[in-house]
Length: 338
Image (cartoon, rainbow, N blue to C red):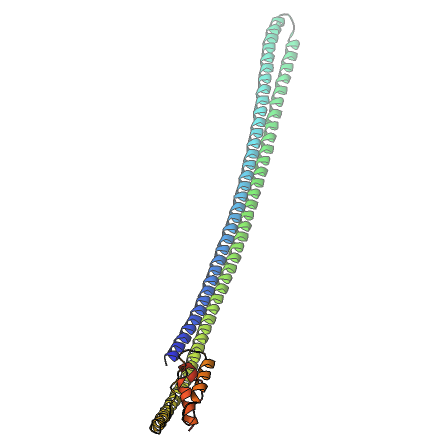
């Protein structure tokens, strides 16, 4: 019975160890998959960080190019303003020089005229009126020429102003077109970046949904497997109980048979003792030999030598031989039937 309990306890311990090992293995697999999921998430975050850094670098590069383009346009505009200012300065310088030259010529003419006039007045007293008239006409002609020259210079200034105005309007128009083109380029870039981020977020969302579904499926599979293991454990336990019940019945049966065998042996022993008493009363001799841990050959030789001097029945001798054996060998010997 103790042996049966120990076997049952060992089987329970073994089954519990197997269940614990399987549970530990499943937990390790689940932990490993969670670690893998964390590593995947970490890789995704690293890819997101790299993409953000690349986009940031592209944006910085684009901002740098935009800044360089703006600086280049500012430099060109500054050059153009300087050039325009230089042109206007040169024009005003030339105009000033021309006016000064005209003024000098006019002053010269006036001085000459005054001198001529004085000379004419001096000569008037000497010459006649015709010469005086000729000189006056010449002076008027020179004055008219001077007025025409002034008018031509003003006309040239007006044309230059109109041309400069037209060039400025053209430059403003180009500048407006360039600004509009840059705004369109910025808008296209923003749309492209927005589309890229939308696509990336969509893929990230799909990937998270897929990983979530995989984890949910893995959890369901783990639950199913655990349920199947529990069913198998309950089935094995039921089978073990049935087997233990059968073994207990067999053990009870063997115990009953052993009790019956002992009762029969006790009955035979009583009969042998009775026969021995009868032999003693009739003047015979009874053999009392025991093995006492010796080898079976020595015990057999001694029993044969002694049994030749004994006066007993064969059944008594056989039972005496069996009783004298050690207990572990005695269990292997068949019982003597009367």
